[in-house]
Length: 283
Length: 274
Image (cartoon, rainbow over all chains, first blue to last red; front, side, top):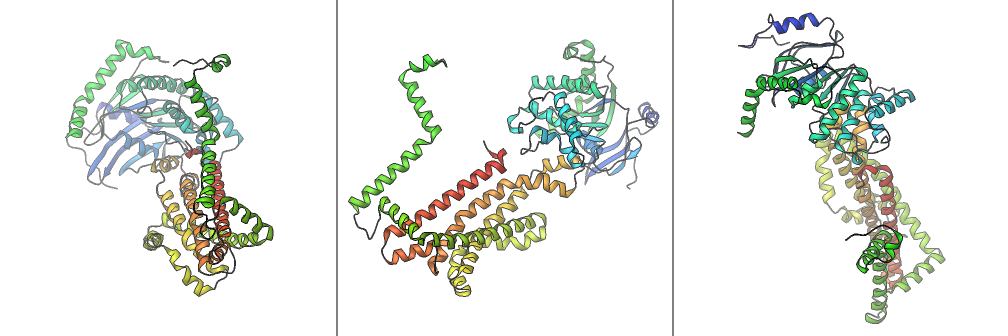
């Protein structure tokens, strides 16, 4: 393991934020400790500390290149951390497992499988694709609003419907933690808003722990109990904003002053970073 | 133009709409294709009877048909077809099996690919049919030399397509399966193989035409029986109806096998249909 050096100019431990995390880590569903990730010369993530309570809905926002997707992939076990630990229920994880379900940005549906066939892939891989799993998956497809579409092929579905399959597929393994990587980013604005309310409705049924990566601040505020604001160069958690808006939430909450204040506050936190990344991308 | 979809309105629809409906019906029934073939045959018949009018150079479709019937009745055609068919099937099956296996090996091992790639690419580009006389010299005018020629022509398109199909497997889909904790074996069976199947089938389809060419050309170089033998025999005797009879049977076999493959594709890889 590579010895950890505190980042110059970045507080490490002892501050208010870290203390809160330490207290929570014993009871956390997901606990991340001092996680670093380097891609050769590029320092993608530095010193990520995080404790997520069971049933908590957390969003990760930040400018392009802040490492939020890399972080999600490390938690999923699709990527290895350079150093640091990821614990789920106190158990160290380094590989994909059925305690986590991943919802992909592009739907990644298998074109040769029907909706049901796609949703059953998790149980199939686990060798538990019996009639019980099939019944449960059919139930899930109904839950995500795809009743009657079980035998359709992906090419016959709209973008929104494909993302519903994507979600049902992740839920079909009944994971403890749902990891969602900008799942609605390819959808048009209206479909996106509908999918946000749908996601909350589905989440209210089982209250799984969710890590949700997004570019869209209003999406993060609308969905989450807590928004982690990532900064770039190196990728790190800059701040954590608790969202105390009452649940269940409906779309009209987005027009309340309280909601707008949250969005404003988070935007101000990342504004400089976003501007810098935009300029860089155009340079 | 507004057009209500009621029976009464349709009957009194303007002529342009009627013409359009006839066009649609034509497309639906593929009638245009049948008419085209019928016209082509009629033209051929006329040309060979009245324009060329030389039985040593051209046979009319009616004469060809008669030749097919008489050859079939005498059992001669059946014998030629059986010999050519056997050569084709043995060669084609062997080439398919080896081709798919080779493609799998090339896709799964960098070393295997580096070792075989120059041979496969080189031999695919080479008109290996030119080796037919050599094979006949080595293995005689019997069935073995023909089978070998079929193999050399069918093997490489199958290999190349299998390898390409496996190589172009979407990394996103592989990653998706990996996120569910799939083993490499599961990834192969559930993602790589199904996504390569359309490519493999396309390679096998390509192999049908090449295999038929291989059989006929190899038989032309030296054989005791077979459709190629029938054709060369007839050419030597200036028996145009029987020469064309051989060609027509080969064409029919090619069309039937390709159509059968189309059906197989629609069953095995329905997701590639538009």
